[in-house]
Amino acid sequence: MIAILTDKPSVGKEIGRIIGATRVRNGYVEGNGYMVTWTFGNMLSLAMPKDYGTQKLERNDFPFIPSEFELMVRHTRTENGWIPEIDAVLQLKVIERVFQACDTIIAATDASRDGEMTFRYVYQYLNCTQPCFRLWISSLTDESVRKGMENLKPDSCYDSLFLAADSRNKADWILGINASYAMCKATGLGNNSLGRVQTPVLAAISRRYRERENHISSDSWPIYISLQKDGILFKMRRTQDLPDKESATMFFQDCKLAHQAQITGISHSVKEILPPDLLDLTQLQKEANIRYGFTASEVYDIAQSLYEKKLISYPRTSSRYLTEDVFDSLPPIMARLLSWELFPAAKGTGGIDISGLSHHIINAEKANVHHAIIITGIRPGNLSEKEILVYRLVAGRMLEAFMPPCRIETTNVEAVCAAQHFKAEQTRIIEAGWHDVFMRSDMVPKSGYSVNELPEVKKGDNLNVCGCNMVHKKQLPVDPFTDAELVEYMELNGLGTVSSRTNIIRTLVNRKYIRYSRKYIVPTPKGMFTYETIRGKKIADTSLTADWEKQLAGLESGMITGQDFLNRIRTLAKEMTDDIFNTYSTKEE
Image (cartoon, rainbow, N blue to C red; front, side, top):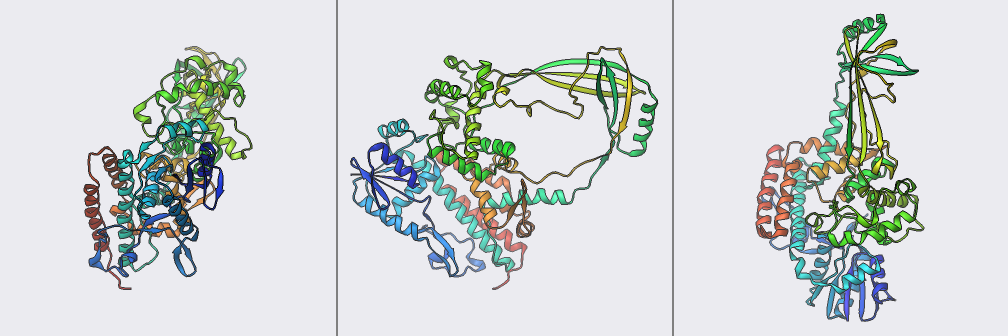
């Protein structure tokens, strides 16, 4: 008998259906020589300090690092404190019975670092000894699962992946536990929760919010003149805004007295905007937030739902490229997509040659773990409104990626009026190309000199001045982060992974460090207090996490060992706790 472990009941039952294990039991399905069971996410975590017999940490106990880490069942908070989660306890017993009844185990948890860690932790916790194999798939279609079952690899092939995940988890525990406990000890406040990633993210959100609150506005006075030719009225803006009202008023009065402006320069330029790459999870979250106002958490959950419904490929990917074999499977998928008429404008352009798709999105090196998010070709049905919108983003991006470039023409007109220089700019699409998919108008560049329409003019033309106005503009403070901006900031600064960033934001919300104010993410009073407490400390330094990610990549590639990595973390934990204690006077509880 062969056991298969997934990390969701829905995934387990679907894999069971495909391989013929359809008899439903309590906590698993079986049939055709298989027993398929599941976890409810990651049901095991690293034990807390008290589980090692440490009831109270004193100053000299820091940094606290167990000689051997222990695993514990996921806990939940109740009125009587933290207790093991009953569903996790019961399901682990089911998994144990299934494993004991089988002589081979297949890991079918999420095909990622964290998914590998979920399986290995269960295997270790239950003291298993059976040989293990890995099912590594990028979608849940019948074809993908069957192909994956035919190409199982020994799970030992993924040792480096587990090593990176396990080392990250232990290092997060070491820094998070020690920083949180040290801060509580040093300040006498018992509700601090600090972490390697969540704290720099909180610091970034709070710092931007504080900058907004402390913003000192600067004033400027643009001057506009209105000209007319061939029945077309258009505005031109002075090339330099004035910094004070007095000088602006003087120049404005000169323009009011002028009757004509002379065209002094005309230029035309054509620019090609190349099609975008395919979507990874971060780009999908950004697009959905900008277009529809969805939060990063919403997009994460919707993408996972579409994946489990077999409509899109594995969503928690950081790649925007495909491998050669995946690319070769695209023509029939693209043909089906066009036949559904989800994007009639794109179909009407005839811009996609199904038989000769461009190879520019093939990059095996950048798609070595998981490729970009694509649709599977299964026609969607019975989706929620939000699911439809996210699905359209994925499908539409596939069309955009293979369509011709968009060609944009920009016309600049310069003029002189009352010895002052003015400028106007018109940008128009001359060949829509990939813009036709979503009929985008937001992609046309705009500037402070943009106008909707310019007449045909030539150098030396004298045009009548029909009006003149002066505007008082204030420099606006920077807005707080939106979800799109925050996930982009996290990506650029190496904060978290593509699969963990959403949970980092959720954790900060759940722990009441940040909240949503309309579409913006702002710190709570608790968050601002914590920011002021840790500002300037190592735990809030984004460069720490960026360096960490490089070391984790070194773990996966075998360039450094897990022990080397944890030794560095041990040193860092000591520096971090010393930093905290040296700043605050220790208060005995």
